[in-house]
Length: 145
Image (tube, rainbow, N blue to C red):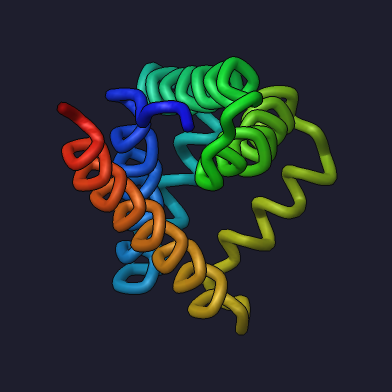
């Protein structure tokens, strides 16, 4: 069985923290939607920093998945499945793909009846990812000699 690489827990901790920030969406719909739609439309330095960091994490995870494919660990499927989705999402946003833009506008519609379930699901995804990162830290310590 392949070892847990030092950055693997951080992958899940960072993605978890990124999704956990969406508690803000549940507390302040208008502020959250205005911030993210503004960020996505203006494409300033913070946009490129966040999107670049997310893209690099996804590419690193995919490379690790394929490098360790002979001795897979179950959580590494998140690198290919989740990371692949995130890379598609980032590319669609950067390209301004009209169907994706409409989807984002619907997601950030503060009057939408599905607002709470949608953003709650992202928060739960973040909590799960963060918990997995903590579990990987403990597991890595046990595996280390």
